[in-house]
Image (cartoon, rainbow, N blue to C red):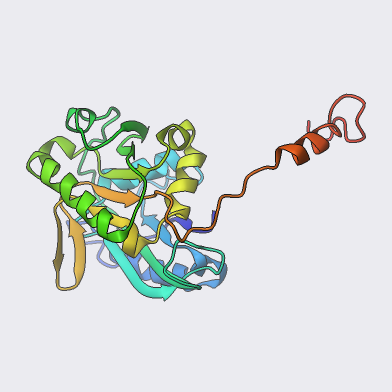
Length: 261
């Protein structure tokens, strides 16, 4: 899906350094986002694997590799006030929006949770929460109203979780959504909802956020607000009557019998 890119690069600038962190990967990320149709992406996750065993086609393994290594204080890089695909309605206007790069490299710094942490499971802030992948939790909450209301919601979440960051080390990514059952049904649903309904600069938040020398980061989990916004285009849904008309062509005796399988 074009809003999301997964990439593997090489990290060769300082091979002699005992500290492994993204350097050449950021150069590669700039190249990727400036190349043809790749420039339509809003989210780029990029890493380097010294063992050469990682594959971007194994999405769940790739996300786990990134999340095990990413420093949320250091490794998130925004491009604000930039262009966005004409058919992407998550931005602030026609062809207007933002991009973000998650560049992670080095040794594992966390073990990812595979169950909902008690601090989130018992929270009154959310209606329901379900695991998507290790370290990724989808949380159903009330519908989006406005950026002002969202700011207050994020402040409430921070006030409840700020003193319990140690219990959230294994859960680096939280996704706010309208329908947790749909988003948790399969990985494709999660990817579609999370990365089509968000404008990075506006819809990425975090626990214990800070800004230093124009760099944004957070000490707790990253929060992606993937709820439907008022300016989004309506969903494309199948018309029941049309489906009935076409389905009859594929049944036994139909003119297209056997074509699909």
